[in-house]
Length: 367
Ligand SMILES: Nc1ncnc2c1ncn2[C@@H]1O[C@H](COP(=O)(O)OP(=O)(O)O)[C@@H](O)[C@H]1O
Ligand SMILES: [Mg+2]
Image (cartoon, rainbow, N blue to C red):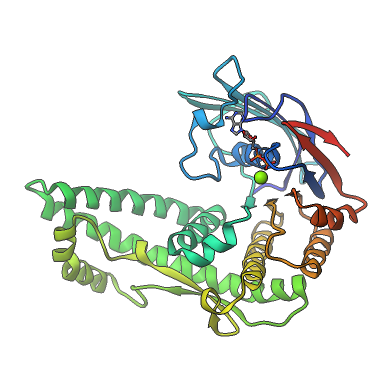
């Protein structure tokens, strides 16, 4: 991962954003504006440039294309600062219904930018606490970003699982033989992925408690645990499990058992934060997890990811807003933080050195 800061962004035909150069500072960038004016769209454009995908599920090209554009193509121009090289680097792209193309310093590139990015939206904490699939997705996305082998193994696992499910639902004559072969592969991948998940949680665990304390000056035991069906499994034990569950899989037509059903539990002073915590405490715990991840990222790559915080003020009281803002102010990462909340804006406005932008109908002005 490279120590990059985004300095300039210009998009064309991207949702409601006007074609204009948006300037960012290396520290905190506050993006203000009333609802529906384009704050989230700016974060989404930055995220898209880095990840080549949206943070929205199933976001497609037509959804992103500005409805007023004459030309059915979205284009991105951006300038990043490479801290290690002390130099600027331009990165641009265009995206139409046939796909996207990207250029680093005007040369076509296939590989994504090796830049870390984290994003949180106003609902992430509640989804994380309410839904096992959101927890799985959070861990998979964040762990993939810092562990390439995990990412590759996860992608192979997902493909195998899809194929296995297809066999189970169609049942061609050779399917039992094929399932046995897939299970061999999935066994190895499942054991590898489970070990990597456990290692990740071990690494992040001490950092979550510290982040909570640094953020909110409160001592709490925060722990994240993996709830797996495969604890301590060997390959043979895994294959036996597949055999034992095959009959049910055949009846229901998909794989109902395995690491794709594993879950994570966030414990707050030993109690499940979903059952025990107030919404505010859940948000504080979730933010601590996120900032712990950012610390872990720094530990691994000696640089920070770009941090996108989309209206995180909800559920937190004024004291916690101040805590959060001074925490951000003491850190050295680049933050883009949005809000439509006037009281939270007042707190952000106490940051004298922050870059402050105001968005109205897709037009961005410096304040
Ligand atoms: N494809 C599109 N083309 C043009 N405008 C769009 C498109 N998709 C969404 N919008 C507009 O973008 C605005 C929402 O922007 P958003 O960044 O989510 O607002 P907020 O400032 O509240 O974060 C809405 O006004 C919506 O109508
Ligand atoms: Mg928004």
